Structure formats: C-alpha cells, structure tokens
Image (cartoon, rainbow, N blue to C red; front, side, top):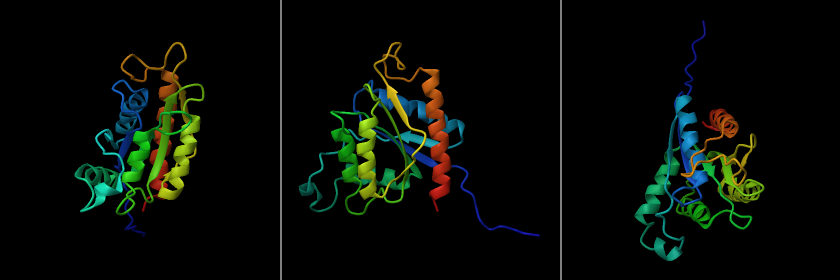
Length: 193
C-alpha cells in the first residue's frame, strides 16, 4: 500500500497585465475573456491595473518604493502565473508595459520564476513583433514564457473580432485564447514548486 504525501495544487491564482491603458482596449478585452476561461477551469484570475504606476525613476526609490509600486509587486508575487495582453507600438511594447516590468524588478525581482503567457491584438502581424520584444525582457527578468500556442490577433480585419467596447466576440479567436489559457495552466503546474 502506497500513500503519497505530495499535494497537487488544484486552484491557482493568475493575473493579467494589459499594456494598453485605453478604456476600450482590445488587449484588455482579451484578458477579460481569458478571465472567463480561467474561471471555467477553476482558477482565479484578475486584471491588474498598471496605469497608476509612476514612471520608473530611481529618485522615487529614495526612502523606499512608492506605495503603488509596492502594491503592484505584491500582486505579482502572489500570482502563480501571469498572462500579458501585449499591444504593439512602433514594433515594440508599450511604455506602460515596460514601466510595469521595470518597477516589479526593483528591490527584489518579483517576476523571478513566474510562468507567463502572452496574447496580443493589433495590426497586420497581430502584435507578433512586440511579443518578441516582451520575450527579450523575460530573459533578464527570469520569467518563463509559454511558447505555444501563440495568439496574435489581427484586430483591423472585417468583421472585427471585437465589439465597440473592446470585448472579444469572435468564436475562433475565443477558442485560441481558451487553448492558451489551458496550456498556461498546465505549464504553471509543470514548472511551479
């Protein structure tokens, strides 16, 4: 008779970070849809607002990190995994996304060892270029990205995969996001202690 003392984490906590601060952001809309997919799989998911973070500036660290930064770092540290909604600005990531990455790496790297997935909605390549730029930052930050499936959504096609409020409405793309969420859950279980 064999009794295992190992425990399997059944419910995990994931956070979403959108690099777009726009109210009707389609990248935030993809994360809203992903929230439903995580919930159906029995996991918690919340979108963390990064719009209130001050611009990264070492002068702001004198006497300790700003309160908004400390709260953001706690959100990252308490997550089992992260899903990034990655817009593309001039072939790169947005200033808001880079700012969030940088702040959470200060005074102890809150990203270290985190599994992550990436989705993106944008122009002709559907944010494929910015997703590659984001992956470069992952190397230094020790974030472990899920490689497949890739979700690069071409937002300017007709009919649009999004409604006027930025919500994902295309069933085919919803299926892609569902597959990515499922793979991220499996990836997180595989690499997390």
